Image 1 (tube, rainbow, N blue to C red):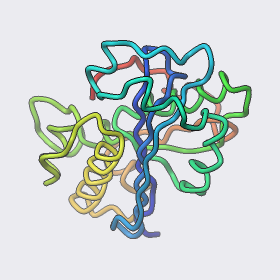
Image 2: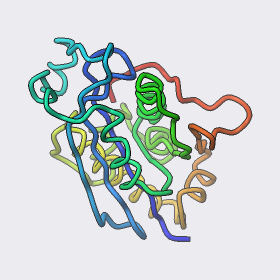
Image 3: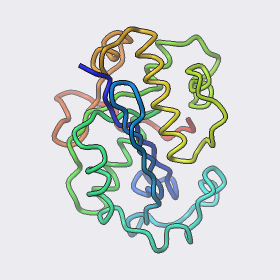
Length: 205
């Protein structure tokens, strides 16, 4: 099977996982980027306060999102872009937790998706002092991007997965996970029995 997936990255307005204020999406087919999209999101009510600390990280302020669709209003566009792909994300437990929490806060069912964490893959692929996204992306040959811009981060994540797959001679996402000893996680109805790590602590990746 080909190396097909959708890389995803969220920025949040505050420490709540539900407070998604920006998303970046990158679609990869047979190891090549074929499409990308990003947009601002108005966080769900009750999770919509913009924390100064978060704004310092990503530069997004309340005014940027004031006229944007709420999570539930943009949700169909996100799902339409991803289709039935596996998601990949750096520190994927955080990003999958955003989907789950934002859906819960919006009173909608979390979608069924499987995902692979590029942070786990990077740790099994490169020998680095740090595996934060900019460092791991540099090892994959993806440099000089605007870290904490959701689309740029999704592109960096995609680059890591593609480079790692080539390095390990992996044919698809499942094969890459197997070769690197990384876990395929799941959210929504796709969640398997046993613990799936979609509640990892919020860290700066």
